[in-house]
Length: 200
Image 1 (cartoon, helix red, strand yellow):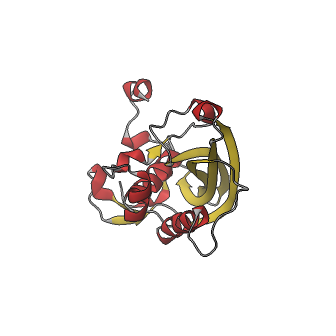
Image 2: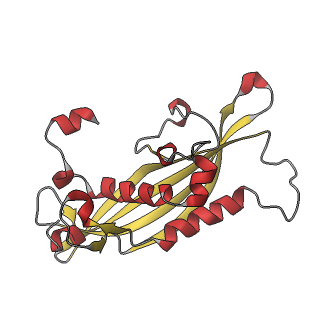
Image 3: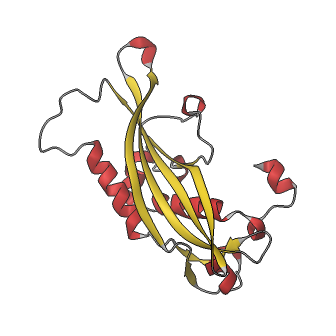
């Protein structure tokens, strides 16, 4: 948000949850299969979108479907000795057209759940969110931003009918991941503990 950056917010005071979301999206964009599916004809990684506040899904503008975007539906911070533990929920949303999710599909052919399974594998394979600190000039090597990631739930929601009522409907398949991160409680603003320990 330009008005936040204009008020002096930068890398040094970015919220831990926003850092987790950013690294999560980078990992999705780096996967060749997801890029083929959701990057458009040009396989543009920026078409895998970062939309932290996509709570009103009807107003979210996406160029085309199928589309993949990541949101930040919730975060929770609890005190632990010497730090805080934060649970950051990142929701990946696959938006697609279908006449109806109850329609028959051929057996033994990969479908949407195969895409979901791949997405889960991509996220879990980098569940510690390895981050190269050189990206922001610290240059102290790679640190893991998260202690673990858990698959929380997979859900399906019909968004609206499209195409002038021709029967094609817009659906969102959401995959929620819970990242556990440690946050330094002694600094204002709070910083991800792995970055504090290396001075990044």
